[in-house]
Image 1 (tube, rainbow, N blue to C red):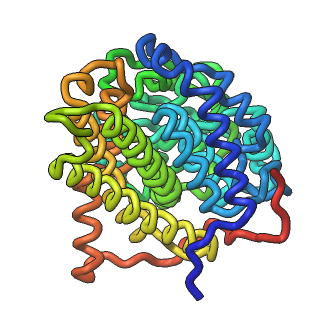
Image 2: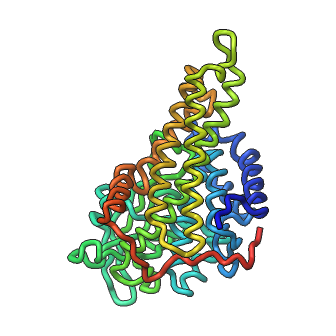
Image 3: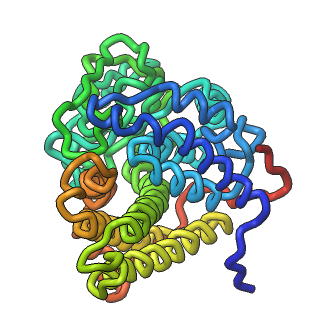
Length: 401
């Protein structure tokens, strides 16, 4: 049976996050964006609403809601600004869900529980200066030394670099095995030899904290190995399935924001004696935004449905991420066009939407990577197999808000 209705709990969740965004983000985001300032208090307030572990099971400190509820949170946060959706994407999608899927019980109790409660913040360290889409090109190493691994290397473009307490970091334990020699580790900020530095001068997402991580002989206990040695590449790819899902959901929120701003302006601005919304070429841009919104939302919630069932969704999530981010980028471009010269200034939010819309087209798999992936699925060159550990299916027995 197909059901396109949201549950009462999901509707209440959307209303809660929307009110939060309208009160806690909208009045301040213009200033934060201009200053390049990330307000850590937003994370604390999200924790108070039990949203830092919205889809993490109650037994691990979360709210126990389904994966599409995570999509709802990301939609509404990105309607406020991409920076805060990104923070939740990294904390929940890339880190906490990876711990839920691959972590031992001891690791879940030590790291996942405080993250789900919002007491600690999690982040994800994969990208390096010479290794973006080509994950096997990473150069960070982890050498076994008794009961520890010694990490050396650097990561870049890491969200929450200066904010997070815990990082899932990928490093080579055996370079000769190429991507089969990559392993994953849980690294704490307080470990000696760890440091971070923010990147300034970004085109967009200026209210977000993004930067570099440095590992100088960081001693990581062997208990912090996530999964098995050599399993890091599979862990990273499964983590990206979750991250891409949240990015796609956020893109839906950005399209929504572009549409709201454009419709409002269409009714306010008059040219040639009538509202600009009466002009057919403006209507065409509005129609394209609406089409992008509805198509993207369907793709996102289909991927979420598969996640709820505990099924592989790499193909569906890749498509949702590619299409939704492209539609969001186009919607932001059209929103600026609709606003004309005013859209080129920060008097209106659409110039920020356009700047913010570019990064998601690049990170967590460029549009080119996803294009190739989709073609390979269709041509039969790519097939997904069950992983040793799958993301748990949603258990609807208890939901806590």
